[in-house]
Length: 319
Image (cartoon, rainbow, N blue to C red; front, side, top):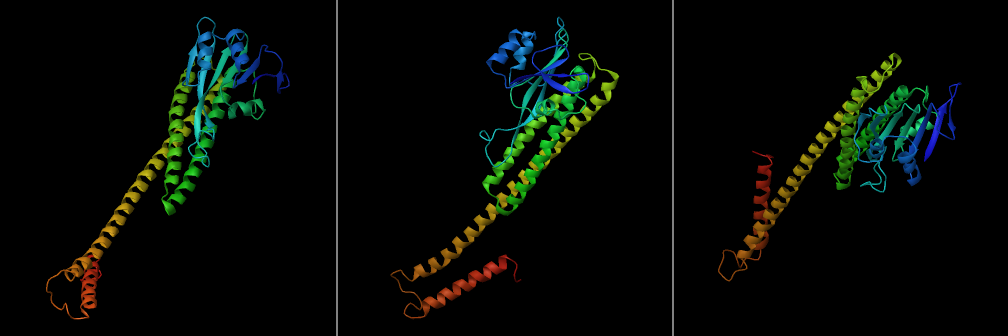
Protein backbone atom coordinates (compact mmCIF):
# COMPACT_ATOMS: atom_id res chain seq x y z
CA UNK A 1 0.00 0.00 0.00
CA UNK A 2 1.28 3.46 -0.90
CA UNK A 3 -0.45 6.58 0.38
CA UNK A 4 0.58 10.23 0.35
CA UNK A 5 -0.45 12.75 3.02
CA UNK A 6 0.06 16.47 3.43
CA UNK A 7 -0.88 18.91 6.16
CA UNK A 8 -2.73 21.93 4.82
CA UNK A 9 -2.83 25.52 5.99
CA UNK A 10 -5.80 24.71 8.24
CA UNK A 11 -3.75 22.13 10.16
CA UNK A 12 -5.58 19.08 8.84
CA UNK A 13 -3.70 16.24 7.19
CA UNK A 14 -5.30 14.81 4.06
CA UNK A 15 -4.47 12.38 1.30
CA UNK A 16 -3.08 13.72 -1.95
CA UNK A 17 -2.55 11.95 -5.26
CA UNK A 18 1.11 12.71 -6.09
CA UNK A 19 4.25 13.51 -4.09
CA UNK A 20 4.93 17.20 -3.57
CA UNK A 21 6.92 19.42 -1.24
CA UNK A 22 5.96 19.07 2.40
CA UNK A 23 4.27 15.69 2.03
CA UNK A 24 4.60 12.33 3.77
CA UNK A 25 4.83 9.21 1.60
CA UNK A 26 3.73 6.12 3.50
CA UNK A 27 4.47 2.62 2.16
CA UNK A 28 3.28 -0.49 4.01
CA UNK A 29 3.89 -4.08 2.82
CA UNK A 30 5.24 -2.84 -0.55
CA UNK A 31 4.46 -4.83 -3.67
CA UNK A 32 6.74 -5.09 -6.69
CA UNK A 33 5.52 -1.83 -8.19
CA UNK A 34 6.08 0.11 -4.97
CA UNK A 35 9.52 -1.45 -4.52
CA UNK A 36 10.35 -0.34 -8.05
CA UNK A 37 9.18 3.20 -7.21
CA UNK A 38 11.51 3.24 -4.20
CA UNK A 39 14.47 2.07 -6.29
CA UNK A 40 13.94 4.12 -9.44
CA UNK A 41 11.64 7.12 -8.89
CA UNK A 42 11.84 8.17 -5.25
CA UNK A 43 15.35 9.60 -5.46
CA UNK A 44 16.38 7.70 -2.33
CA UNK A 45 20.01 6.55 -2.12
CA UNK A 46 20.31 2.93 -3.26
CA UNK A 47 21.98 1.82 -0.03
CA UNK A 48 19.10 3.29 1.95
CA UNK A 49 16.56 1.49 -0.24
CA UNK A 50 18.35 -1.83 0.29
CA UNK A 51 18.36 -1.32 4.06
CA UNK A 52 14.72 -0.27 4.03
CA UNK A 53 13.63 -3.46 2.26
CA UNK A 54 15.64 -5.74 4.57
CA UNK A 55 13.35 -7.34 7.16
CA UNK A 56 16.34 -8.22 9.38
CA UNK A 57 17.80 -4.71 9.50
CA UNK A 58 18.55 -3.55 13.02
CA UNK A 59 17.78 -0.14 14.48
CA UNK A 60 20.26 2.57 13.48
CA UNK A 61 20.61 6.01 11.90
CA UNK A 62 22.59 6.84 8.77
CA UNK A 63 23.44 9.98 6.80
CA UNK A 64 24.43 10.45 3.18
CA UNK A 65 26.92 13.30 2.69
CA UNK A 66 26.22 13.82 -1.01
CA UNK A 67 22.45 14.21 -0.87
CA UNK A 68 21.88 15.13 2.77
CA UNK A 69 19.38 12.29 3.09
CA UNK A 70 18.88 10.72 6.52
CA UNK A 71 17.77 7.16 7.17
CA UNK A 72 16.37 6.22 10.59
CA UNK A 73 15.39 2.61 11.24
CA UNK A 74 13.65 1.69 14.50
CA UNK A 75 12.25 -1.60 15.73
CA UNK A 76 8.50 -1.57 16.31
CA UNK A 77 6.47 -4.02 18.40
CA UNK A 78 3.93 -6.17 16.60
CA UNK A 79 1.53 -8.98 17.39
CA UNK A 80 2.88 -12.26 16.07
CA UNK A 81 0.83 -13.99 13.40
CA UNK A 82 -1.38 -16.62 15.06
CA UNK A 83 -0.38 -19.11 12.35
CA UNK A 84 3.26 -18.83 13.44
CA UNK A 85 2.51 -18.91 17.16
CA UNK A 86 3.33 -21.97 19.25
CA UNK A 87 -0.05 -21.62 20.96
CA UNK A 88 -2.89 -19.87 19.07
CA UNK A 89 -4.67 -19.11 22.37
CA UNK A 90 -1.68 -17.05 23.55
CA UNK A 91 -0.98 -13.57 22.16
CA UNK A 92 2.74 -13.41 21.41
CA UNK A 93 4.77 -10.47 20.15
CA UNK A 94 7.62 -9.81 17.79
CA UNK A 95 9.39 -6.75 16.41
CA UNK A 96 9.97 -5.52 12.87
CA UNK A 97 11.82 -2.52 11.40
CA UNK A 98 10.21 0.77 10.44
CA UNK A 99 12.24 3.01 8.13
CA UNK A 100 11.97 6.79 8.11
CA UNK A 101 13.80 8.66 5.31
CA UNK A 102 14.31 12.41 5.11
CA UNK A 103 14.54 13.78 1.55
CA UNK A 104 15.61 17.42 2.04
CA UNK A 105 16.05 18.08 -1.70
CA UNK A 106 12.38 17.23 -2.32
CA UNK A 107 11.15 18.43 1.11
CA UNK A 108 9.54 15.04 1.77
CA UNK A 109 9.53 12.34 4.39
CA UNK A 110 9.09 8.68 3.46
CA UNK A 111 8.17 5.84 5.82
CA UNK A 112 8.45 2.19 4.83
CA UNK A 113 7.13 -0.73 6.85
CA UNK A 114 7.31 -4.28 5.52
CA UNK A 115 4.42 -5.32 7.77
CA UNK A 116 1.27 -3.76 9.15
CA UNK A 117 2.27 -1.21 11.75
CA UNK A 118 0.02 0.10 14.54
CA UNK A 119 1.94 3.37 14.82
CA UNK A 120 1.70 4.13 11.11
CA UNK A 121 -1.97 3.18 11.20
CA UNK A 122 -2.60 5.67 14.01
CA UNK A 123 -0.79 8.44 12.09
CA UNK A 124 -2.58 7.78 8.82
CA UNK A 125 -5.98 7.62 10.53
CA UNK A 126 -5.50 11.04 12.14
CA UNK A 127 -5.35 9.74 15.71
CA UNK A 128 -2.15 11.65 16.54
CA UNK A 129 -2.64 15.25 17.53
CA UNK A 130 -0.34 17.98 16.30
CA UNK A 131 0.76 16.10 13.20
CA UNK A 132 2.40 18.31 10.57
CA UNK A 133 4.07 16.72 7.56
CA UNK A 134 6.14 19.87 6.96
CA UNK A 135 7.99 19.44 10.26
CA UNK A 136 10.09 16.37 9.54
CA UNK A 137 12.01 16.27 12.82
CA UNK A 138 8.88 16.64 14.93
CA UNK A 139 7.17 14.01 12.80
CA UNK A 140 10.01 11.56 13.53
CA UNK A 141 9.93 12.29 17.27
CA UNK A 142 6.16 11.79 17.37
CA UNK A 143 6.66 8.42 15.67
CA UNK A 144 9.29 7.40 18.21
CA UNK A 145 7.10 8.50 21.12
CA UNK A 146 4.14 6.49 19.86
CA UNK A 147 6.37 3.42 19.31
CA UNK A 148 7.75 3.56 22.87
CA UNK A 149 4.21 3.87 24.26
CA UNK A 150 3.11 0.94 22.09
CA UNK A 151 5.89 -1.13 23.67
CA UNK A 152 4.52 -0.30 27.11
CA UNK A 153 0.97 -1.29 26.14
CA UNK A 154 2.15 -4.65 24.83
CA UNK A 155 4.30 -5.20 27.93
CA UNK A 156 1.23 -4.67 30.13
CA UNK A 157 -0.60 -7.23 27.98
CA UNK A 158 2.25 -9.69 28.54
CA UNK A 159 2.02 -9.12 32.29
CA UNK A 160 -1.73 -9.84 32.29
CA UNK A 161 -1.23 -13.03 30.28
CA UNK A 162 1.56 -14.06 32.64
CA UNK A 163 -0.67 -13.58 35.70
CA UNK A 164 -3.46 -15.67 34.15
CA UNK A 165 -1.07 -18.44 33.14
CA UNK A 166 0.57 -18.47 36.57
CA UNK A 167 -2.80 -18.96 38.31
CA UNK A 168 -3.57 -21.95 36.10
CA UNK A 169 -0.07 -23.34 36.55
CA UNK A 170 -0.40 -23.21 40.34
CA UNK A 171 -3.40 -25.55 40.12
CA UNK A 172 -2.38 -27.95 37.37
CA UNK A 173 1.38 -27.84 36.61
CA UNK A 174 0.56 -28.81 33.02
CA UNK A 175 3.08 -28.74 30.19
CA UNK A 176 0.73 -26.51 28.14
CA UNK A 177 1.03 -23.70 30.66
CA UNK A 178 4.82 -24.03 30.77
CA UNK A 179 4.92 -23.72 26.97
CA UNK A 180 2.85 -20.53 27.24
CA UNK A 181 5.38 -19.18 29.72
CA UNK A 182 8.16 -19.90 27.23
CA UNK A 183 6.23 -18.01 24.55
CA UNK A 184 5.93 -14.97 26.81
CA UNK A 185 9.63 -15.19 27.65
CA UNK A 186 10.46 -15.16 23.93
CA UNK A 187 8.37 -12.02 23.42
CA UNK A 188 10.19 -10.29 26.29
CA UNK A 189 13.57 -11.19 24.81
CA UNK A 190 12.56 -9.66 21.47
CA UNK A 191 11.32 -6.51 23.20
CA UNK A 192 14.39 -6.09 25.41
CA UNK A 193 16.80 -6.45 22.49
CA UNK A 194 14.87 -4.08 20.21
CA UNK A 195 14.32 -1.46 22.90
CA UNK A 196 18.03 -1.26 23.67
CA UNK A 197 18.78 -0.81 19.97
CA UNK A 198 16.10 1.90 19.72
CA UNK A 199 17.55 3.66 22.75
CA UNK A 200 20.97 3.79 21.08
CA UNK A 201 19.40 5.31 17.95
CA UNK A 202 17.45 7.90 19.96
CA UNK A 203 20.58 8.81 21.92
CA UNK A 204 22.39 9.47 18.66
CA UNK A 205 19.51 11.66 17.48
CA UNK A 206 19.79 13.54 20.77
CA UNK A 207 23.37 14.46 19.92
CA UNK A 208 22.02 16.68 17.13
CA UNK A 209 24.81 15.83 14.71
CA UNK A 210 22.81 13.89 12.13
CA UNK A 211 19.37 15.47 12.50
CA UNK A 212 19.04 19.15 13.28
CA UNK A 213 17.03 19.63 16.47
CA UNK A 214 15.01 22.74 17.16
CA UNK A 215 14.40 24.17 20.60
CA UNK A 216 10.73 23.19 20.53
CA UNK A 217 11.72 19.56 19.84
CA UNK A 218 13.94 19.13 22.89
CA UNK A 219 11.06 18.55 25.30
CA UNK A 220 9.49 16.01 22.95
CA UNK A 221 12.81 14.20 22.56
CA UNK A 222 13.20 14.08 26.35
CA UNK A 223 9.74 12.48 26.56
CA UNK A 224 10.80 9.91 23.96
CA UNK A 225 13.91 9.00 25.95
CA UNK A 226 11.95 8.73 29.20
CA UNK A 227 9.26 6.52 27.67
CA UNK A 228 11.82 4.30 25.96
CA UNK A 229 13.89 3.82 29.11
CA UNK A 230 10.73 3.12 31.09
CA UNK A 231 9.80 0.43 28.55
CA UNK A 232 13.31 -1.06 28.86
CA UNK A 233 12.96 -1.16 32.65
CA UNK A 234 9.52 -2.76 32.42
CA UNK A 235 10.81 -5.43 30.02
CA UNK A 236 13.74 -6.16 32.34
CA UNK A 237 11.53 -6.42 35.43
CA UNK A 238 9.01 -8.71 33.71
CA UNK A 239 11.84 -10.88 32.36
CA UNK A 240 13.34 -11.27 35.83
CA UNK A 241 9.94 -12.11 37.34
CA UNK A 242 9.20 -14.65 34.60
CA UNK A 243 12.61 -16.29 34.92
CA UNK A 244 12.25 -16.49 38.71
CA UNK A 245 8.76 -17.96 38.40
CA UNK A 246 9.91 -20.55 35.86
CA UNK A 247 12.78 -21.58 38.17
CA UNK A 248 10.40 -21.83 41.12
CA UNK A 249 7.92 -23.99 39.22
CA UNK A 250 10.81 -26.13 37.98
CA UNK A 251 11.81 -26.77 41.60
CA UNK A 252 8.19 -27.53 42.53
CA UNK A 253 7.90 -30.04 39.69
CA UNK A 254 11.16 -31.73 40.69
CA UNK A 255 10.04 -31.86 44.33
CA UNK A 256 6.67 -33.34 43.34
CA UNK A 257 8.44 -35.96 41.26
CA UNK A 258 10.65 -36.86 44.23
CA UNK A 259 7.59 -37.26 46.47
CA UNK A 260 5.89 -39.51 43.93
CA UNK A 261 8.99 -41.67 43.56
CA UNK A 262 9.33 -41.95 47.34
CA UNK A 263 5.69 -42.99 47.68
CA UNK A 264 6.06 -45.62 44.97
CA UNK A 265 9.20 -46.94 46.67
CA UNK A 266 7.39 -47.27 50.02
CA UNK A 267 4.50 -49.11 48.35
CA UNK A 268 6.95 -51.47 46.64
CA UNK A 269 8.67 -52.26 49.93
CA UNK A 270 5.35 -52.77 51.73
CA UNK A 271 4.18 -55.23 49.08
CA UNK A 272 7.54 -57.03 48.99
CA UNK A 273 7.70 -57.93 52.72
CA UNK A 274 4.46 -60.03 52.88
CA UNK A 275 5.48 -61.71 49.65
CA UNK A 276 8.79 -62.79 51.20
CA UNK A 277 7.14 -64.07 54.40
CA UNK A 278 4.41 -66.03 52.65
CA UNK A 279 6.81 -67.47 50.11
CA UNK A 280 8.50 -69.36 52.96
CA UNK A 281 5.32 -71.35 53.52
CA UNK A 282 5.22 -72.31 49.87
CA UNK A 283 8.55 -74.11 50.11
CA UNK A 284 8.77 -77.90 50.41
CA UNK A 285 10.34 -77.79 53.92
CA UNK A 286 9.03 -78.05 57.47
CA UNK A 287 8.16 -74.68 59.05
CA UNK A 288 6.67 -73.76 62.46
CA UNK A 289 2.85 -73.71 62.61
CA UNK A 290 2.55 -74.90 59.01
CA UNK A 291 -0.25 -77.26 59.98
CA UNK A 292 -2.21 -74.67 61.94
CA UNK A 293 -5.14 -73.31 59.86
CA UNK A 294 -4.87 -69.75 61.31
CA UNK A 295 -1.17 -69.26 60.53
CA UNK A 296 -1.81 -67.14 57.38
CA UNK A 297 -4.06 -64.51 59.05
CA UNK A 298 -1.73 -64.36 62.07
CA UNK A 299 1.37 -63.89 59.96
CA UNK A 300 -0.40 -61.24 57.84
CA UNK A 301 -1.51 -59.32 60.95
CA UNK A 302 2.03 -59.39 62.43
CA UNK A 303 3.64 -58.20 59.19
CA UNK A 304 1.13 -55.38 58.68
CA UNK A 305 1.47 -54.26 62.31
CA UNK A 306 5.25 -54.09 62.00
CA UNK A 307 4.99 -52.14 58.72
CA UNK A 308 2.48 -49.66 60.19
CA UNK A 309 4.74 -49.15 63.21
CA UNK A 310 7.72 -48.45 60.95
CA UNK A 311 5.71 -45.97 58.85
CA UNK A 312 4.45 -44.16 61.96
CA UNK A 313 7.95 -44.04 63.37
CA UNK A 314 9.40 -42.56 60.18
CA UNK A 315 6.69 -39.89 60.05
CA UNK A 316 7.30 -38.97 63.72
CA UNK A 317 3.74 -39.87 64.73
CA UNK A 318 5.03 -41.42 67.95
CA UNK A 319 8.36 -41.54 69.75
